[in-house]
Image 1: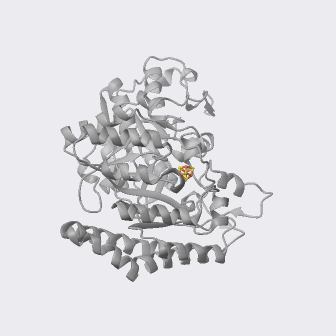
Image 2: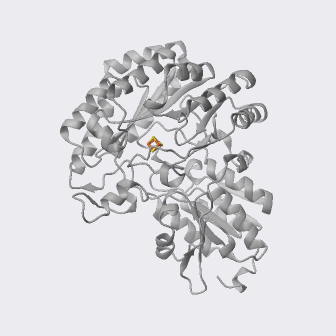
Image 3: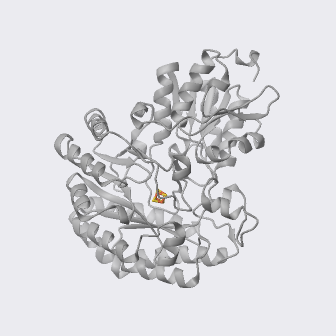
Length: 484
Ligand code: SF4
């Protein structure tokens, strides 16, 4: 990067969530096709936090959430052309990397500098820059804060190697890294720039608008398939419960939004903190309903009772498998199927809905372990469930294992195939077996008498029930096609 090429100052900045052939949520460790899950369209929180930091510097920032706006590549390009940004930043992930880099190419051809961040970029910055010459910069580790500091350095013409957590090109075009950006307290993150997004795009299955709040980052459990320990670190950083609930109150009062998702890698990683958040919500916040995630060995009845009292209505639970052996292989050594049943039944009794996620086809999976998973699924009173093919995202232990030539399993396919709806592991069960299981199990569960009885509870809310059924049917139709 020559000094001459730095004549432009970054005054007008655009952050894009590019559309892709498969509609994806790309947020932290969640890289989820909307076609295989009940995941509602989710506000791109990292982009909104990044935009808030950049707005303080340049004042002229635009977010384009092409995924949830349903924009075509041509429409997105037209928006870039009419806005005329100096810098375009793209949210990228492994299965969408080709489409993400197409947006980078478009931006470059329209005269902008280009940058990317996200799970794939964090794991493979130099490789991605080498493969995509139109990509000028990567924001790593804490991309929201790195982007803001980078713009400060750029606009003050400071040396780029003083900008931590950055990948950029040397004068001869070779990608180079600066030292990592240190993990930061979440209190140093600015509140997301929600005013730059159309909040009506983000609705729960029953149609209510909801928003996402950053609650914590990082997870100490290091499950072999999960991006969280690499992307956000093994140490959990939590928001101060007072500041988190202040944001809930601010959202409720200013935007009249009464449903929120607390975004965390593992919301329930510390009981004391969860209880404090619940107490703050009960004492100070207006009535809201909220969603979080959990792991079965991190909650007890007291915590769940408190969460329900504070408005929790849905918990995403990483169940993964019904086989004790596979649970151990996946990184959930202390989790027993009995504990899974206890948590899901307790939530049901308390009136908290559950969305269970399962990982199918991890190395070591057998027909017998699939049978154990199926039996467990049919015993659980889950409200929603998602069955994912084991996906070796770069940076995970699973990816390292599959790319080690000494191991009996191998990675096949392209980046596009590394996704929860596709299967790229060779050396164990066949892709047909894994996909057929996923395709069959959700039908068996959702069209069972067992599930119909569970739903009778919703008869008390006929409008909500009708909207949810309509939403679920549309999603189930997409799931049917996804695992073919
Ligand atoms: S407990 Fe959840 S967030 Fe933590 S590593 Fe395992 S899957 Fe990831």
